[in-house]
Image 1 (cartoon, rainbow, N blue to C red):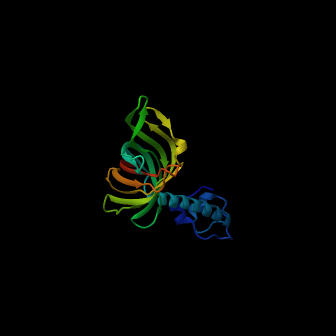
Image 2 (image 1 turned 90 degrees about the vertical axis):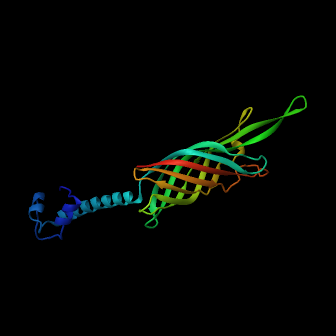
Image 3 (image 1 turned 60 degrees about the vertical axis):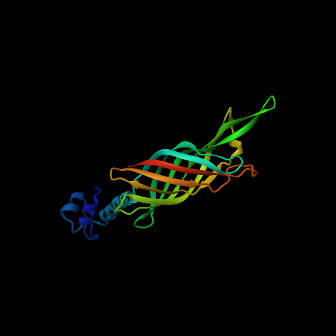
Length: 239
């Protein structure tokens, strides 16, 4: 039996007639008033499958496109001892709306690679009774998983967003006179609270700004209390 498109299904798929048996599928189109229960059941299933796939495709499109982004950011570690300053870093990621909360509000999830950390000054003892001050950089690389509530009216390109962002530590190094691996000193999991604004142009290009304060002390040693802080500027592309 030939499967029908949604349009043909709607036109020809009526109620079955158990008294009349049609062996030729082409008769189904010629004599649309009568067809067998067997053909009815098979074509009804095929039509329902086709309709379900069409509805799923339309629902996925209505949620919105994938969004890829890349940009630069400034990050630091809040707290004291040492007193961290801002350091530059890049980030690269992708996001997708997964649930429509209301007409203008969507839930988005994503994944990104983010270079974070901070600069600080350290004083080291030099043989001979002298001390030397040097500039060090603590570089923490994460894979973050932002979960964002995204608000945007259809009549405007401006949007606002806020959410929660778990992160998984990939590497941690302290760079100064020498480079030291400090991954064993940093917690593997971090959690931030991203808040952002941006603008999406009609040509699928956009720009956004996010501020992401951390909620957790990143150090395993409780003597030192530092939280991640990131300000990121990104360019976006929807597809």
